[in-house]
Length: 264
Ligand SMILES: C[S@@+](CC[C@H](N)C(=O)[O-])C[C@H]1O[C@@H](n2cnc3c(N)ncnc32)[C@H](O)[C@@H]1O
Image (cartoon, rainbow, N blue to C red):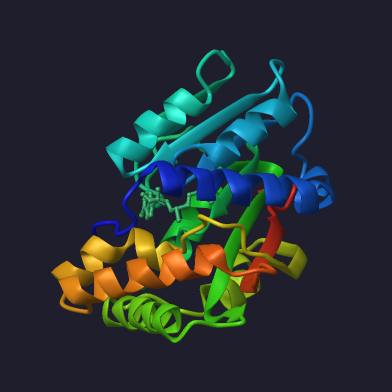
C-alpha cells in the first residue's frame, strides 16, 4: 500500500521537532534498551532521518545506525540527515523485509510505521524481532490516533483530523496502533520490558502542521476532501498561527520495549 504523508520543508521540521522531543523524554528508555555508545541500531521506517541522526549521534563512530524506508524521497532525505557520519546510512526496503542483516542489532527501532500498515503489523514486528541479536531489543513507538486533542480547538482543524482518521479507517489501518504495541511484542516472543504513554503534551508552535495536513493530496485523491476543504484548512492554520497564548496540543503516543531471549 502506498504511503500518504508528503515530505516538505514543514514536514521535515515536524520530524525534527518530534525527534528532539523524543531525545529529551525517552533517553532513559533507549539506554535501558541498549542504545548507547558503540551500539548497533536499526531504524525501520526511518522517514527523512531525523531520528536516525539522533541515534547515530548516540551510538557514535564505534557503533552503527542503519535506516530503512520504502519511500525513495525519505531515503534520500535520511541519507542527507546523516551525511558525513561514516557509521550511519539509509537504504530502500520494506518494514517486513528490510534486507538488513538478521540477528545483528543491539536494538531495532520502529516509530510511527505500524499505524500505516493495517493487517501487516505482526509480520513487521516479527521481522524486527528477527533483526535483533539474541538478548537485543525492539523499540516501538506509535499513537492512539483517536485521542489527538488541541485546546482551544478550531472546528475546521478538528474536521481535518476527523477526515484523516476516516481515511485511515477506510484503508484498514488500526487507529489504536499505539495501544497494541505491548501485545504485538509478546505475540512474536519478546519479553515486554517497558510499555508507557509518552505524549507529547505541548504548546503548539506557530507554523506546525499535523500529519493530516501532510496527507492532504491523498485525502483529495481518495475523495475524503475537496479543493475547497484545503483552502478552508489553510485559512484555519493561518488563524491558528496568530493565537496567543499558544494552544495546547496532545498526541497519545506510546513506547514499548521488547527483548529477545538471550538464547534464541
Ligand atoms: C510517519 S513516518 C515516521 C518516520 C520516522 N520513523 C519518525 O518517527 O520520524 C513513517 C515512515 O514509514 C515509512 N513506511 C511506512 N510503511 C512502511 C513499510 N511497510 N515499509 C517501509 N517503510 C514504511 C514511510 O515511508 C514513512 O517514511
